[in-house]
Length: 157
Length: 168
Image (cartoon, one colour):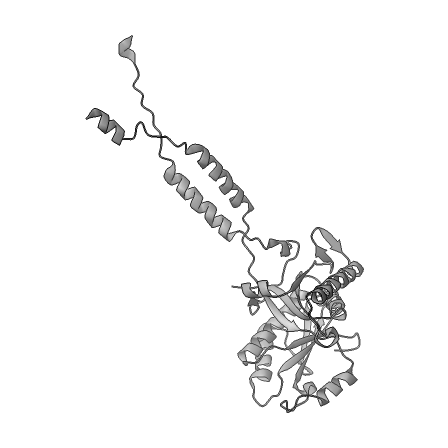
């Protein structure tokens, strides 16, 4: 009986290198994850343009920006809501009032009628929307004092 | 001797269980792999768009142009008209009242003619756009104009207006 003792041998793989690799992969994905995706509405398919300039990270941080996502029917998209033209104009008015209030609170004196608001309107419009829908929203922005616009497009190549 | 060898092999040392940590790391990795979405490569055209002014105001503004500008704004502005077909595609392109073939290469050639020639005064453009034109078609034209301005080493200055039903 005593001769049948099984020796205590177990095959334990060394998991430390595997753990190292997994942590490196996690680090990679954490670094490349896109935290600014709230501005990218997947319902909007941008047109292509080769000479569109890439957005500098400095601009993204320093500029006061208002992103308008416009779907193929000309509706304004905010979060999960779809605003037709009349509601979109109200939303733009509301945003302009917030910008003006912000300027007032921070003590900036600005002649809005002459110089316009310092906020840049980032226009992310669907490639299939007709020009009249875009122009009516641009005019609504202009009426509220916005002058700076950036038209978004997908960069080719 | 035996005791020393056993100690050096670490058989009696503290064993840290790596497997639970590996499980957790794999769960984190799975989360990041599943939620990862490559950021779209977006570019932009930045422009100052002033509210449209009546023709009389434009003429007054042209008269008040800064002394460094030899020509009034109206003479330095290249007029462009874009007409749409029924399906919203680009049907006709007119530059400076001249119709050009509706092809990208022809448009680029014509713009080079107007913007690269030092004897031609144009340094900005007003694009009158058919209200039914699709945005992707307009973007093709904006792209061509921006390219031409950059090739001519001029700052791209574009403005838009809606084409009236009796125009073009």
